[in-house]
Image (cartoon, rainbow, N blue to C red; front, side, top):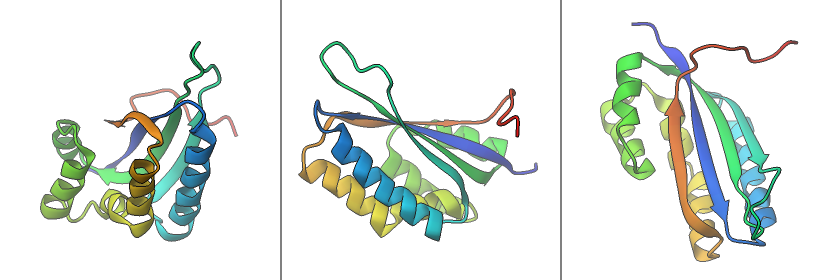
Length: 140
């Protein structure tokens, strides 16, 4: 079966007043990804436009990768823990290097460590892997 692009949606929930710090760190990761990870086709950082009544915000990452066949993608969707997902890709799906490279890079690992050490998050990161089913990307 032919490989297709897939998307990762990551939802980050910084603690109140910590969103700008997390955004700065994410932009450092994005700069690294753009320069060093050609398998990542796009990497978009988005901030919620309407914070909750108590001032809490979300950061939503939209990442596009190349190359998962449908059976592999369905298997990956069953994982809830990203570290488990990355290790499974590494050991069972070595040809799916882009996501593995991103998840295990020193830059991404350092980012996750900073989130924990600086106590920046109010909830764990939520990750969803999705396959495009229709619509369009751009009018350009």
